[in-house]
Image (cartoon, rainbow, N blue to C red):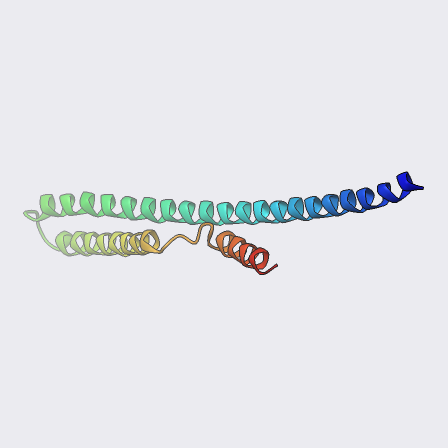
Length: 130
């Protein structure tokens, strides 16, 4: 009987350890999933930044090209100057607008890992309370 009584606490202790280990694994899995979501969000932000920068670069290059033609045509005849100048201004304004948008996007602080760090802090606080 002594052996049977000694085995009962061990089984309870092992079961308790297994339960705690399963909880820790579940917590780890949740945190890793959250990290994955945050990485995906950061990738989307970086793609958006690259697209905005690419569009800005395209229109600025186009504006420079048109300004070049404008300067060449400056000494040519009638109203070609007005049309070329307006196109140059329009392309440059579009390029500047996209460059400003890209700059604003780049200056926006990344939210990468903020939710994960907050959840880990909550976990730490809960463990310290116990």
